[in-house]
Image 1: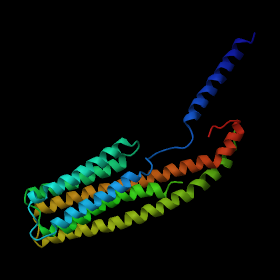
Image 2: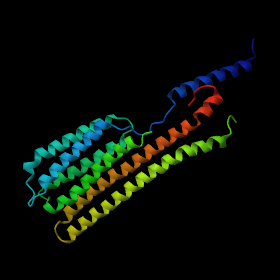
Image 3: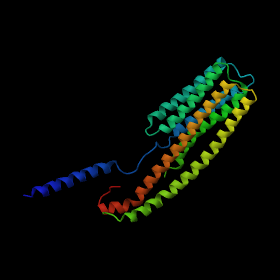
Image 4: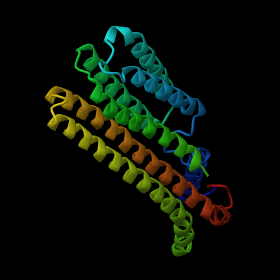
Length: 150
Length: 109
């Protein structure tokens, strides 16, 4: 019959081995951010076209009244909401969700300005630059996930 | 000690360095470009206000939109950093996998 101390040591080794085996089954590669998603890539590209279309309609002097474009705004927000829902469901994707939220805030600001009659023609140019920058940031991150994958 | 630690450090650094260098060059070019565009937009907003073509409320609204956009740009930079860190860690693990697993006698990595 082995001594008590030998038995204790053997149990300790067995437990350590079990722990390492359990840990190693989850080991392997590390994931810090969600991988590239083609649907998001295509969705953001399509959203960019919708936003550009809205801005083209706004780019007149005077700017068309809000009522004539409320359907266009609704469509843009609907597409954005769908993209956000998809990306919120992807794990380790807080950056893209944050970017989509930033875009939603800017579009909300734009809509409110328009609803209040405070949107004039000269503002459309800077607005386009700002929204394009936001969309470009979303696309850049998604494409970097594709490009920088080993 | 199970390993000669220094003999593991060199392949780890060797695996990580090109990944981090490549990511830094990508992100710094992007950040520079977007910072320039941001500066140009802020200049446009200021010019419109000074020319009286927009009022304070309109200028503030445009500035708010620019802030949201800046947030999106910085989130992109953060994301690229995470991709780089992820790839660097995984490359480091791959670089020492055979040595570590060989020593332990089973596939820890």
